[in-house]
Amino acid sequence: MLVDSHCHLDRLSLKHYENGLPDAIAAATEAGVSHMLCVCISEENRQAVLDIAHKYHHIFASVGIHPSDVKERVVSSDELKQWAQAEKVVAIGETGLDYYYTKEHMDAQAVSFANHLNAAGDLGLPVIVHTRDAREDTIALIKEHGNIDSAGVLHCFTENWEMAKQALDLNYYISISGIVTFKNAEELREVVRKVPIEKLLIETDSPYLAPVPMRGKSNEPAFVKHVAQCVADLKQVSYQELCDITAENFFRLFSKAAK
Ligand SMILES: [Zn+2]
Ligand SMILES: [Zn+2]
Image (cartoon, rainbow, N blue to C red; front, side, top):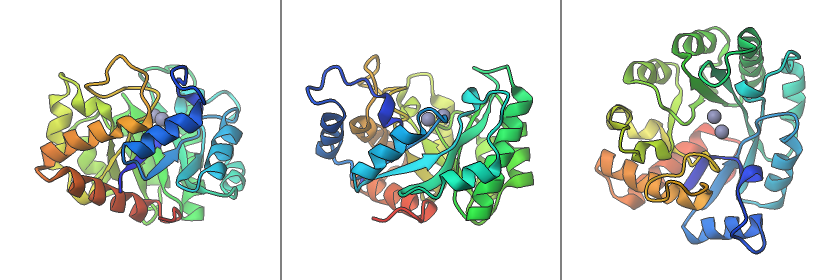
């Protein structure tokens, strides 16, 4: 098994595929990808994400508002809980804090994140957390509003070991994207070496952040194999072992997802 634990299938660049998304999904299957989690970022794309997951048995969905998509009106935890009733929804998110790209609505981002954490805690669902330049606030909010049992994942992890350690202590998983293959990502590779292998997930975050050797191209789930190979090398396990272990981790965390 090989799982892309975080992709945005409704946003892929599909120009080079004759039949669009079905071709990209077929290419992923060809590359060995057995399951994918298609992640919601806004009220606008929620239905598209649910429709894709509905159509393919091996694709799961989340519901939530990305911190960069938070507007003045913040989604309530009751609304999130209602959205989560849709078929194939296995997680709440992505949510979190992004002070790097989005310096506006910082207070609203925090309220939105807290609402996501509360909704997920009430439902016993894991949270997909996006965090950028907001280490302390992210950990503080998880501590205050998170549910240690259903926990969640820090996706597309780019922070330091100290933050990874704090997240692991809160029962969180750490998800590694194509960034780990970038030349200047030595600090991240050091984090990967230290994180226990049973707490690691892998992802593309496609269409963003294509891994080496696909850099410059638009990213897609098929490329998760390059992330898997890099992480396998860092953990000194075989490619197949790494795929199987991270897949098992995925199904342990997202326990509503059926193999
Ligand atoms: Zn993100
Ligand atoms: Zn994302």
